[in-house]
Image (cartoon, rainbow, N blue to C red; front, side):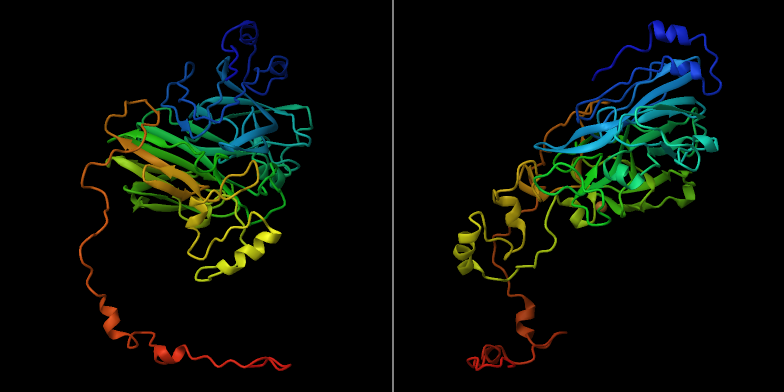
Length: 470
Ligand SMILES: [Cu+2]
């Protein structure tokens, strides 16, 4: 991380004398130097060293933007720019983002903070910044054309408001929005409560990420921004499985996971081994009476959700979007099902035209995960990932909640695979199998055969004689 020292130094001292109760043009003369991040790794929580204390969040495969305290105002500097994002090891994409990454850095402030954000536009076109969910003066809402002129290429605009509501928010452009969000421009925003709040619990681990979707043809690097629905990469913070870091917690930790959806469809987010409650959204904390136990919660487009639970079951628990196509990486959809089709005889013929052709799909698609099928360079395999017991056969919006009794407080390192206690894993039955009862009642069930089986194999064949209507 190129974290330059702007908490102290001449610039900060000089600015200390400037009264900053509204947007100050003087501030522009010495705006905070932008902090850039080039690594897609999950950065440790940024413990605040100025301002009101709070318990920081951890952004999956992301980071929190440091700020400068300027006469009581928290100053951040976001730079909108083209970036290269590693979506998974071996697969990078040309995106647009902020400060070196897509998504941009998480912004963390405290309820009541006066916040000033400098937004510099290094994109090839104009942009703006909308602060999703915030109470703020109308002119700070960032809707280009409606509340402000767009930020021209090469220019910096200043946004300033008081973070009035504690909660879970996000930011994204509101100028050529379709293109800019399809290219990855978005970021998380958390406003921590300034004091104990009966509806906001204190947690041991607080994770956040945004749902985003891209359409990148296998072998290429740039998202197709005109795609409306048929995206082929479903990501958490612009990462796809197995590139999404695991959520590593200590047994009995109280865990909060904050999720925001900036894709074009809904995502039922599902956890294994635990129940959670949804404790709030971008609308604020939910009344206790509105909280029910769930193992899946739908996060609709433009919505945010806070999931909370006590991690009281040790193990490696899958945590994923429940739409099965969203836990796959790039794939062709316009493919007939081949389940039950024996096309072995065709393979040598097809290989004359397509030397790489492989027989696949007639027993299901699990072969995709097992075979080393040749795929274009810079492409994430459709279903992939190796667990301790074989292929996980996943992609996209999939990660793992790792609960360990010996994970240290504040330690976010991956503890490795869960050592299951002996005798607690599903196992192969090796005894005798009784005949299934349905064999004795064939033909009398809900869908009885139309005719006896031996008759069904009698097929009359006539050679074509010019017309083929039989
Ligand atoms: Cu989904």
